[in-house]
Image 1: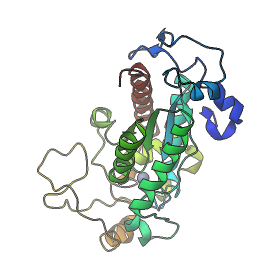
Image 2: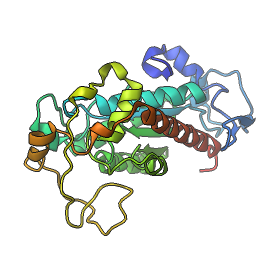
Image 3: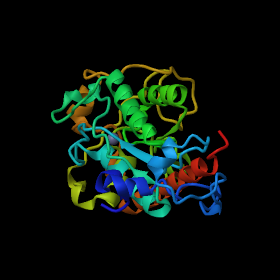
Amino acid sequence: MPGKWLHKMTWEEFEEEFVGKSGGEFSEESGEKIREDSGGESEDKPTKKLEDESGRKPQGPVIILPIGSTEQHGAHLPLGTDTMVAIALAEEASEKTGAVIAPPLWFGWSPHHMVLPGTITVRPEVLAELVYDVIESLAKHGCTKFILLNGHRIVNISWLQIACEKAKRLLGVEAVIFDPAYMSKEIVDRLGFGPLGHAEEIESSHMWYCYPDLYYADRAKDYVPQPHDLYSVDPRYQGDTLCYVPSTVRGMSKAVEVGKGTTGRPSMASKEKGKLYHEHLVDRLVQVVNQLRSRYGRT
Ligand SMILES: [Zn+2]
C-alpha cells in the first residue's frame, strides 16, 4: 500500500503534515513550492496553530478521499472494483505529491446492482451525510482542501455534490469531485474505447493493469444494450439527454442474462491501454492537487 495513508499514521505523524510541508504557495504547473506560508513559517506545533488567534489559516494537507462501491462487476471483475481503482489512483498521486489519503469508503449508491449477490448499497442521503461527516471531522483538525475521488463513476456524483456544497457553505472548506469518467474523455477517445457502461472495456482495462491477479479475462462476457431514447450518462455523449432516469434492477436483468452483469465490451479490454488510461488519470489528479495547493489563501 504505497502513498501517504492517514490510517497508517499516528496522530502525531498526521499533525506533522500541518507544519511547513503543505503550507505556502505552490506552482499550479509543477507542484513545486514557490513561496513559504505568508504568515511566516513556524516551529509551533499545529495544535497550537489551530488555537492561534492571530488570524493565520491552518496549513492542512490536501486530503484525497477515495470513494467507490461494493457491487457486482460482471463475471470477470471483483466486487470492490470501483473502490480499488480509486485507491490505485490515490496512492500514485499521493506518492507524487505528498497528499494524504483518507481511509476509503467502500460503499456507494448501487440499488440497481442489487440484481446480483455481493452488492451493498447505501441510501443517497446516508452517503452524502457520511462524506460530509468525514470532511467535517478533518476540517476541525484544520484540513481545508479535499478531493473526493469517485471510483463509482457518475453514479455517486449527485450525492457527493450535496456533501461538497454543504461543506463549502457550513465549514468554508474547498471540496472538489474527481470522477474518472469526466477526467478521461480525451484519452478514452484516443484509445478508441467504446461508450461508458459497466465493467466494460474501460474499467476492465484499468483493473487488468492495476490488479492483474484479480482480473479474469477468460470470464468476460459482452452485452451491448440498445441506447435509450434521449438519455445517456456518458460525458462524451453529444446528443440531447435527460439528466436523470433511474436505473433499476429490472433494467439490469438483460445485462445479467447476456453479460453476467456487464454492459459494454470487456472482450476489448487491454492491459496496455489500461496503463495509458491510468497514467492519464494520475497526471490529472496530480494537477488537481497542485491546483488546490496553489489556490491556498486566495479563496
Ligand atoms: Zn465500476
